[in-house]
Image (cartoon, rainbow, N blue to C red):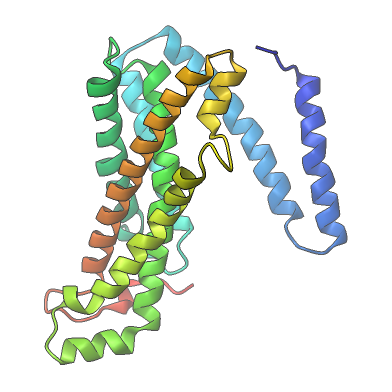
Length: 263
């Protein structure tokens, strides 16, 4: 494996700086966000590298669980912030976080215990990267689906209320928009699986090959990861849309859009 030094990373960072300067010239108003995102990437990955080094040297379930829940809570905040019309109060945070907990944690534990069978099963070398990939993709799917659901409920509120007045239940009135929301949340992972190996080489496979692993072994791990991510994203999206759809109505099955924040 070719080791990278600080100079190599600075050279790569210059590409981002050049892009930011070009965006200023074009007045695209993304230069500041681009620089902030680049700095956050460098700082956050450096910190996680130091944290993982400590975890690898001190393998205990408590520290791994603490790291996992920290990742979950941060992902929950990102899901909430990406929604233009999110739910008010703690529901705006809890819906996505709880859905990710149900899906990503369950799929990760299943993979660690049943498929990988490592001893101990919570070894951070496997648990943290696997959970991180699942949370990252599930986070995107849930954010997209929840945003699509709340937007549809707001824009089609007159149609939904008319269907309620005609005698349909809340589940029936929102069912079409719920299906659209689930489909939107699943499109990224479906596209990723459809294009894997033809259009693009996924990140984990590329990393293993660069680290010196045999391509066949890297492919096996990547197939496993893609299947786990699709399961986690699907379960999380279904759970989030189900929770969100029920939150849009009260106990008397009336549409309650006052529970959504203004964009």
